Amino acid sequence: MLPSARQYFNFVILFFISFNLSAQVTDSRVTNKKVTQNDSSTTVKEITDLPEDLKSKLNTTANQDLAQLCVNQLSQFRGFLSAPKQGPQKTLSDICSNALLLDQCHSVNKVPLYHFNFSTNQKNAKKVLVISLIHGDELPAGTVVKYWLERLSQLENPRNQWRVIPVLNPDGLARKTRTNANGVDINRNFPTKDWDHEALKIWKHLKQNPRRYPGAQANSEPETQCALKHLEDFKPDFVVSIHTPLAVLDFDGPKHKSVPHFDYLPWKSLGHYPGSLGRFMWFERKTPVLTAEFYDEAPKTPIHLEKLQDIIGNLVQLL
Ligand SMILES: [Zn+2]
Image 1: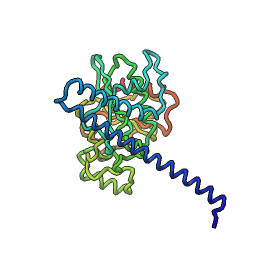
Image 2: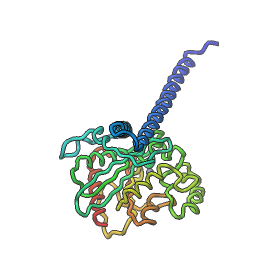
Image 3: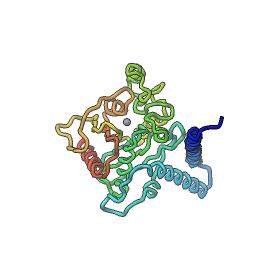
Image 4: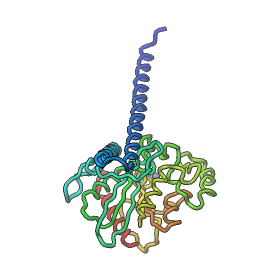
């Protein structure tokens, strides 16, 4: 029996969709392969018995790969590069050329988890660590961290010393999932003291939501291990974790009589869980954590982002 025109039309559409899907899958495989190569080239730079000129060449290649990965990831977010009023304008490529990598910092799929350092010689400067996209499907977090990077890149001598990890969960970002490539919620995988007794028990009690799976063991995930390396290496005075969509500022830190006013997001405590960054850093280590939960949609202008960054700069000075 010959297909009707309608069936023929459906077939063409189906073919087109599956062709597109397979093209996307192939595309992501290529990306992963490229990134695996990046990772091996960054490992190569640790070889010490190579001639100097070859070593510097390999380092350059590694840095270029890292910069390219950074441009690829961050160019998908809205940028406000024209916004900073002072100083020369920097492009995303300029900013990404300063991307750095701690040894062994990569995702499950071997994507490097790069970071940026912004140093200062200001007296009394405190150390602020910003972690974004710990949950891969919270895309406006990328817009927030991109603007903060743009702004910090324009400053000669910031009030505080900043370290920024723009994408802690690149596999989740690529798949648009909250969890990493192993299906683990990194923000439930930190090795809090109660993890062994409580994490899986509470997860089961909360209907085993796969979006909040804490992993088979504490600190089982390479992304969690990388975050711990940064905490150990940088020793922050203050940690900022950027999320969506709850639209609140959740501060785990010393009690203040009055918190700085921020009209875009109210201050509200959300609680904390076994394996969460807030419990690990504040309740067990007394390093304050600000969980900045933005709306589902990124702000249209950078005004609120600028103000929040300044509030953090002030708050950290008060500690
Ligand atoms: Zn989140």
